[in-house]
Image (cartoon, rainbow over all chains, first blue to last red; front, side, top):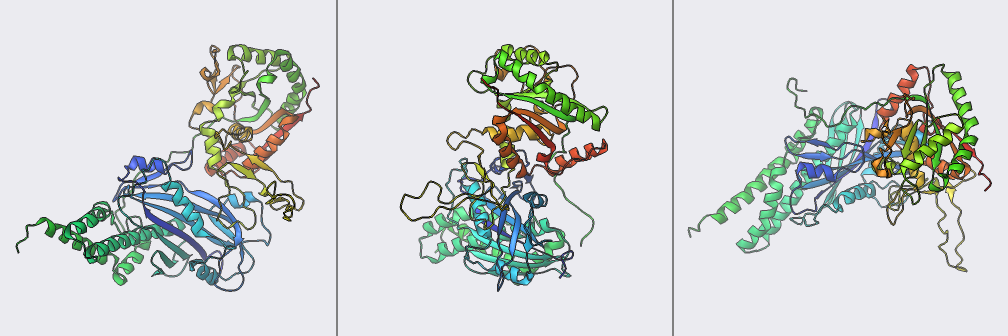
Length: 309
Length: 309
C-alpha cells in the first residue's frame, strides 16, 4: 500500500433530534450553525432543507487506536461541522485523513495547520490495524477519542440558548463511525449495527474525494437514525398494550416530525450511490421505512374511521 | 456513472475580497490615555523618528517606489481618552514637530467586535503531546498557551506531599511557557493581546472584516466630540500609501514586549481563509517580493526603553 495511491480516512457522525419543540426555518438553522465568525453556513433546499456549518479544526497529538500491537503517534487536525436537516435533526460530523509522516519528529504547528483535516502518523503502522482499532468502540484513555470531539460539537449546537430545549419526542441519538480506503480498485462497503446506538461503516472507495465520503457517512447516519427512531416508537406504541387513544398520542409526534425527512441518498454523490443501493437490497432500509410508515398511517386512518363492529 | 442532468444550488460563499496594499505599514504608537498629554506625545515621537526613517530607507532600498504608510492605534474605550477633536490634532502636531505625518488613526474599540471574534474563532490551538480530543484545547475561559500548564500550580495544599510539576513548552527542550489570556472570563472582553493580533493581521491584509472601513479608511472630515462618532480608521493625510501592507513595522514602548510575543503566539495558531493569504503572497510576488510563509514573520518590531519620568 503506497501513500500516494491509498489513503485511510475516518470519521464519526452523531445524529440526534434537535432540542426544540418546533422545526427551525432554514434561516434559523443557518443562524444556529454560524459557529465561526466570518465564514458562511452552507445551505441547500432540495430535496430537503439543510444547513451545514463551516468546518472547524481541532488539534490532536496522541496514540492512534490499533487492533493490535503498536499504537503509532498521530499529529494533526480533525475537522468537524454541524448539520441541521429539515429543521429537526442535528448532526455533528468529524473526519480526518491519515498519512505517513515524513520524519519521526513532530513538525512546527504551522506545518499541520497548512493541511487541515489530516493526521500524520509517526512510526511504522499497518493501515488495517488502525482501521480495525478505529472501528472498535474502545475506552483506552491514551488514544484518540473521536467520540469526545463529535459529542462536544453536537453539544455546542444542542445547548444553544436559541433552542427551547423541548424536543417533541423522546429519541435517543446514534453514533456512526466510519473508515474508508480512498483510491481503492472497487467500491465496497459494510454497515454494521454494533449495538443499540453504535454503528460502523467500512468502505473502500475509488478516487480521492474525501468530502464525498464524509457526505455519504452523514446521509447513512441520518437515515439509520430515522429508521431506528421511528421503528422504536412504533414498536413501543403498538406492543405495549396501550389504549387506542394512548397509541395515537404516542404515534402522532413521530409521524408528524419524522415521516417527511426520509430522502435516502439526497446528499450522496453519484459515484457512491451504489452503497445506498446495496444497503437497500441487503438490509432493506427503504422497505422497512415504507412498511413502518404504512403501518402507522393505516393505524391512524383506522382510528379515524367509525367502528363498524 | 450516469451522464446528462445536473442539479445545483448556488452557494452563498462570495469571492475573496481585495484590499489595497502598501509595501510597508509603520505603526508609530499604540496610545493609551496616559500617553496623550501634549509633551509626552512630542517626546515620544521625537524618539520614534530615527526608527521611522531607517525602516522607510530599508523599504526603499528593496523597492525604489515603495508605498509606505504610517498609523497609530488609539485606546479610545478607556477612561480619560479625551475628545477626538482635541486629541487627534495634538497627535498630528506632535508628529509634525518630528518631521513626519500620521497617515491613519485607528480606534482600538473598532477591533473589539467582529474582527476580534473572527480571529478568536479561527484559532486552532497547538496540541501538547497526549491531546486525544477529550478536552477542548481552547478553554471556555479563553486562555491560550504554548504547552502544558503546571498541574499543581497554586492548587496543592502545603505538606500534602504533591510534588510540584513544571509547565512544559510543546516541542522545546528548555521551556519558555506562555499562558495568554484572550478574553476575560467574567465580562467576555477581549484582551489587549488578542486585539494586538487582530490589528497586526488587519494591517497585513489577512483579515477582511465585514466592515470594509477597517481596511479602506475614509478621510477624517470634521473631528467629532466623541470617539464612537469617528469612523473605525480615519485617513489624516492626502494620498498616503494604503493602510494594509505586505510587511509591517511597529515601534512600541518596551512594556509591549510581552504583549507582542503573546500576539505572535496567537497568530501562529490562527488559520484564516487560505485564499486571502494566497492572494497577498501572489500580489507581493508580482512586485518581486517574496513574503515569509508565516504572517507573524512579516512583522518587525522596535521596542523602546521606557522614558524616565
